[in-house]
Amino acid sequence: MSTQNHEKTILVSGGAGYVGSVLVPKLILKGYTVKVFDTFWFWNSPEDFKKKLGLAHELKLITIKGDLRSVSDVKEAVSGVDTVIQLACISNDPSSDLDPKFTHAINYEGNISIIDESKKAGVKRFIYASTSSVYGIKKEQNVTEDMELEPLTQYSKLKVEVEHYLSYVFDENFKGVIIRPSTVCGYSPRLRLDLVVNILTNSAVNQGTIKVFGGEQLRPNIHIEDMTDLYVQLVSENIDKINKKIYNAGWDNLKVIEIAKLVEEVVGSVNIVVTSTDDNRSYHVSSEKIKRELGFVAKKTVKDAINDLKISLSEGKIKNINDDRYYNVKLMKKLLNQSP
Image (cartoon, rainbow, N blue to C red; front, top):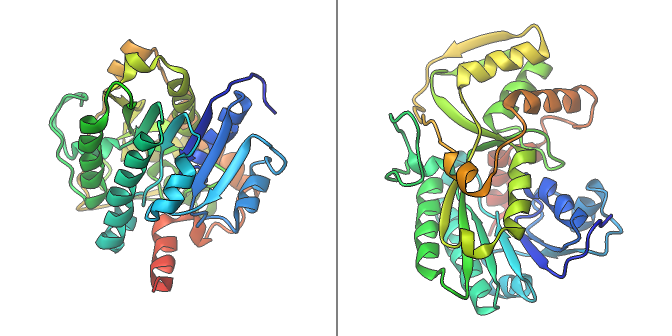
């Protein structure tokens, strides 16, 4: 499967997640050896993950089933690694709110642990996935990286705390970059049907109806193919050029009602029902800095993501759309009930 030769070994923490499942094959195709460190909560096993990605016999893929809360697991994961892409966390606000202590143990303590152990292990490049929701509600026309952070939820507040910690520990030996992705959309082998574009498309295809809560809120989006292409680019980017930098990564800034209308355009006859909401998070994220400094421009649109999802849903690629594994909050509830 490899097309080039590289000596680098890359750790993708959370590599079996929504974004990681698209990213890992791309890194292997580039010739890197990839370590995936994950709990594999959303898979039957690491073998199931490899098989679904078509990597069952790929020698350049190493899987480590482990937990950020275990220092010994983290040490094993970062050992012999040149680059870390840190994606692992309890993802999205509703999941994070279920058990604040549990979330804090993973999204803050676990993240600090992998940062510290990476530094001790001599990791040369650390790429951290934060979130554009650190900005909260903004009235400015374009939200840039230097604007004040006003996180509204535990999920985004902990992302800010980890960002602050990284800005303190990055130095001339331990270098890295912070990325603030917009809401990712599109198809992945580890699909999520709880993200705005994906929710609306699934609802349109399977129920013929879209429920829009509010509708006027602006949501920044980025196609999963572009998001993963950016991580691949960051692995080989001149580290001194990006060290200690923070970049927004987004593309289509659309109102929720505009997304619903795009879904209707792609899927066909759909009933759009608008109701009120108390979720007023709204921001228009600028990605001019990353375009200017790194030449990164997204190639795909929200409409492309809708089309990809429509094809996957229509062709039966996605089995049992009610499976808890497609919805983070449902699976987290199950896991928390099983926890001692």
